[in-house]
Image 1 (cartoon, rainbow, N blue to C red):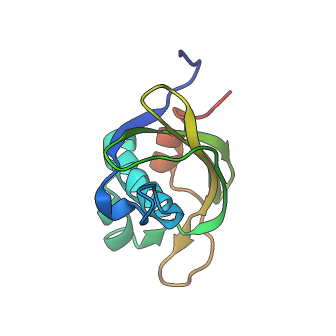
Image 2 (image 1 turned 180 degrees about the vertical axis):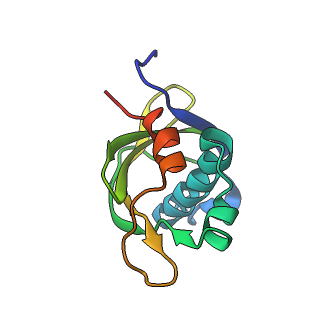
Length: 142
């Protein structure tokens, strides 16, 4: 599949610890995978150190909303492709479109996540920094 925009992709092995007694991914684990994907995307896709963004710049990106759809089961031992793109950019927030795909390309789960840039000192919204905004724009969906 080719797209007219850039996505960040990462392969993720479904481990025993991700699964419930039925051997399928326990749905809260998808949210942990989502957070890990975000941190990897910052460093590998955006070129911004996520830890430094928080500890040195004193900014955070808490989730304001996450909509999720679980479309098919994923099992222990499978490798999922996690695909991330930016759906919307606001002054202080961004909306991500994240898909988890099976090896056959079938969608397993889909997320729309709204993140808000905030000051760690005041916990109030802050404008997205210029360097972050420029990096995010390259991942915008049409």
